[in-house]
Image 1 (cartoon, rainbow, N blue to C red):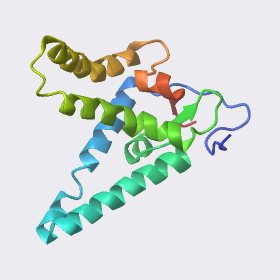
Image 2 (image 1 turned 90 degrees about the vertical axis):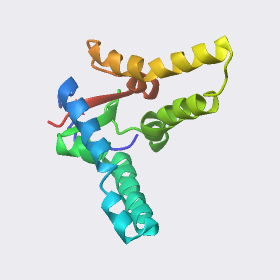
Image 3 (image 1 turned 60 degrees about the horizontal axis):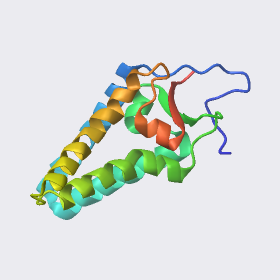
Length: 155
């Protein structure tokens, strides 16, 4: 188990608020635009800036269970047993599931059949369904349930 730097032996944990989770996701989304001004220095500079940002986000996720947005709002991701999630589960949770949905939507966008169109509509609802799970008593989104994670407040 990865040691959790935030959790002491007898610490109580409290689920992060819905608003703090939304604000953290919003901040992380805004950060995606941070490298855009580097485009004036050329596309390679912008790509380098984006790569540095992505590596920083992944580093924080792996070492602290946080993104920059979560760090700003004093929340983090932990496993059900209190440890920090394994890198594979974090990457699945943060990137693989949304990427798979996006790829499937992109690949099937020109399928005119009723089944193809219904599949596109269904995939469009996956993100909404994921988000609506936060209204459960445990405040865990669908991606949290898939990865076995909780987003909690720092004590």
